[in-house]
Amino acid sequence: MPASPIRRLIPFAEAAKKRGTHIFHLNIGQPDIETPDTFLAAIKNADLKVVEYSHSAGNESYRKKVASYYQSKGLSVNTTDVMITTGGSEAILFAMMSCLDPGDEVIIPEPFYANYNGFARAAGVVVVPVTAHIETGFALPPIEEFEKKITSKTKAIIICNPNNPTGYLYSKEELERLRDVVTRHDLFLFSDEVYREFCYENQIHTSVLSIEGLEAHAIVVDSISKRYSACGARIGWMVSKNAAVMAAALKFGQARLSPPTYEQIGGEAAIDTPQSYFDHVLDEYVQRRDLVVKALRAMPGVVCPNPGGAFYATVRLPIDDSDAFCQWMLEHFSHQGKTVMMAPATGFYATPGLGKDEVRIAYVLNLQDLQEAMEALAEALKAYPGKTN
Image 1: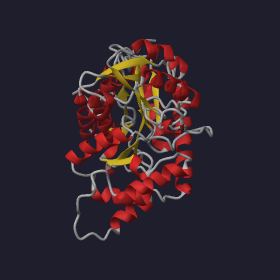
Image 2: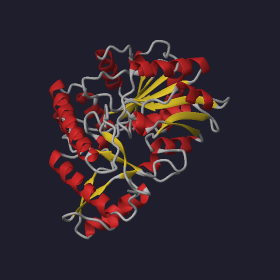
Image 3: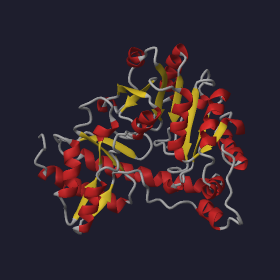
Image 4: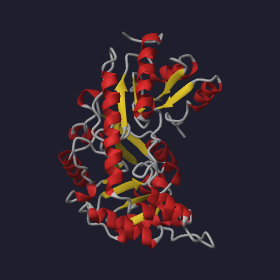
């Protein structure tokens, strides 16, 4: 299994903390936004005498509530189209193992969420990358590049929309181009949509569930982790109109018995969270993004696209080696007793050598912390012995 680029530097961070250095954790998508009261109150007030197994597909009442959530977005989703999983992570793994056999290939635009590599490895699936570039803001690569990578072993394409780690928001037109190649070659299209609530500049998120012609091909992965700032609750789900896929996924669900009980109770209640909560959160993230992008673009040699969604930016820095730089930041650098932890972008690429001058920054902290983190990063780039200009 590949090591997580998001977490593998934790021992160096722990050592820095023991030395008294304050660390701004921009390496991981753990927001400091409060979890909504709807979620917490439901768990606190749960009147259970026995914490029982649930249905392997999740509580029926929760599946109905999830279906109603999608219906409120204008998407035709029924209860039978939904399976509750132990986090979005399990949904990705179940989708892979339901649709692909060992040795099959899945095409993914890179940079991509690093754990796709781990899930693919666990499922015996081969990841085939198609490279997106920072010069285009990490837009979807030309469809011709996908076509070149398709072989007899290709069974699926995976996208994350809005994207982790780049924050890129795919347009309806880009999704339609993917639809054309998917239907032409009879592939599955996995769409990780856990950040769908975080779209900026009044842009509208387009789900693959809304694209005509993908009914038998589309599999959506979703989660409560980011939407309700409940990363530790480990509840997600997969959605598909393909009954055969859902039946196969249920077999994996039965093998692990059931998703967790209390978190389902909280997740079901969280769907009733008022829109005012999301309006506030979105406004907060826009401010955080704007602060970080402005600060980064003011640093000499730094290239930072403006993310259209999620709460990440993949940034090019004037450095020789992002793995060495991120470790150096924890081992050898501090500014006024503080340093910054980031994720080296090498772990978000499958093509060897890419991401060596890039890092992923998660702007999940309050504005004051982000301001201080950007000041520390600016000083670090001046002092780093491996800077390139």
